Image (cartoon, rainbow, N blue to C red; front, top):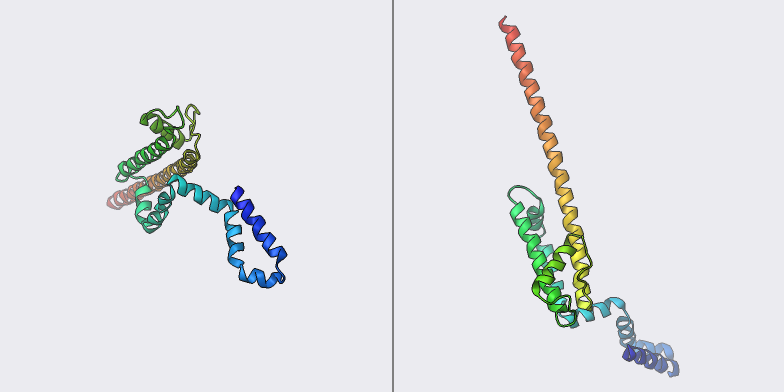
Length: 195
């Protein structure tokens, strides 16, 4: 932060003492861009992610976008996709739990063993959040945010899929009742025609 402040002070001092400030600004516009970018919270967050080693994890978004339809078919719960959905949930618990364990292990005594990280990830993903194990490092907290968001998404998908399942069940049940009623009417008409 001290480097950023000194850079800003030097930039504006040089601008202030320049004879023609407009010409100087046109010649040094790149320095201004660097000042703005370095003071940007988003850029600082990305730099922190890079220092923590999580920037490669951001590339997962590209994979998700390119396989969106395949993932959506897998996420819609049915008899065939339920094992895949469960494997995805437990895989997510493993990834988030292991990541948090690796980031917290040397700094946080609550993450003494890998099962502690897995327990934390499962509790956080299910949105229970007992608070018995809490990440304290910046990297661990960033993983925690992603775990929380993913937990909310998972439960939203489960509720949406349950709604679709119940709606389809209701339509099938109504269609079956209608077919049965139509068959009864036809059978009654046939009986009346034979008499």
